[in-house]
Length: 82
Image 1 (cartoon, rainbow, N blue to C red):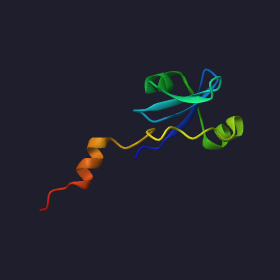
Image 2: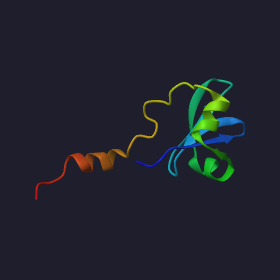
Image 3: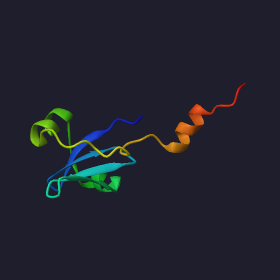
Image 4: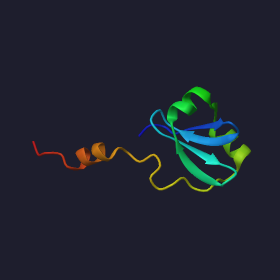
């Protein structure tokens, strides 16, 4: 699995990979899936320690956040015998 990064986009915390990104909207106190290109091109990258120091304990990400690709997972569990 790809490492999940930490960042800040327009003052809001984000967690991201190259293919998926989630922004925590501080006004509504909810996570929103966003285009990862927005993060990769516009967010300030930070590390986990700075992220936690700035934003504290945020609510957990949605259960479907950063799940492995369904097709890849199925292929790994249903391998044909040799």
